[in-house]
Length: 180
Image 1 (cartoon, rainbow, N blue to C red):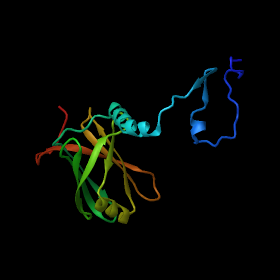
Image 2 (image 1 turned 180 degrees about the vertical axis):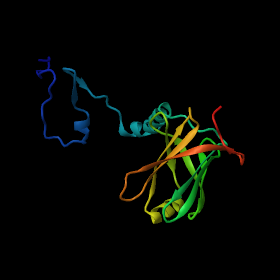
Image 3 (image 1 turned 135 degrees about the horizontal axis):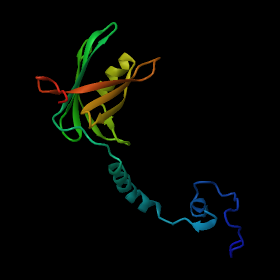
Image 4 (image 1 turned 90 degrees about the horizontal axis):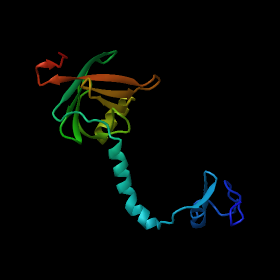
């Protein structure tokens, strides 16, 4: 029992609605001791939160693909035939995505390191999203594997599980990179 009369590791129930100022300022049990939550004005929290999120994002960022690299894969698909998907890294935040074949697209996208060792996050243009929706698919993930110098994209078609597609790095117009 603490000097205030409460038992360690418990809090008294109250009729204070969750999310109200008095509920946020209440005591919190931590390993058998009652501690008071720090009181920070909500305006201060709003000012600090973006910086904290940015710091957390940078600390878990994955390795990014090298600027100037192009990754490509040609697929033979039922009904539509041959389709080439190409991704060119323009700078540390922008890339160009291109589809050649039955479907054509030449658009820019923004990307950044994701949560995980190889994960990349991205933002597609409304035109790219619209084209993918017409086909009933979504571009649901991306990765860059530094050791293999490969980009991977995950598409999610309807009715079947997501499909991962490996994009191999190409050298200009000279052909695919090979390991020595």
